[in-house]
Length: 122
Image: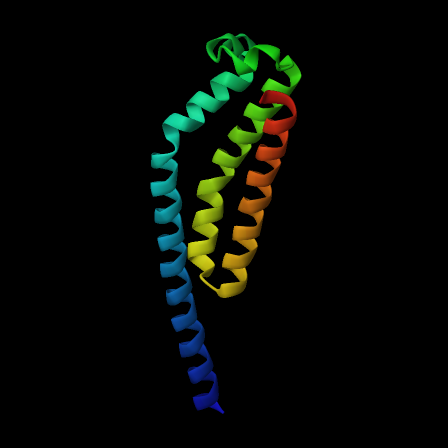
């Protein structure tokens, strides 16, 4: 019986070691994605919080409502903020089901941005 418990403890320790490595890889992947999206995130946040920036996009955006313009940029900002967390989570779990769920969430956010963009901005 002592042998059975020692095997269980060894297996649990090995699982923790493997889990911590995948968590660190997920954190690193999220950090890399965050570094890549830092400038677009800053720009989308500034467009969302300063509606007068609508004038920078002359032409097609001149007829867009201010509420639609702000909503569009808040959706883009939300997608960019969520992206490093989603990528880190997907890499940490690294299973087909997790990747499918994260891909579906990203696809839904992109579809929402396209719909709001078509309705209010373009």
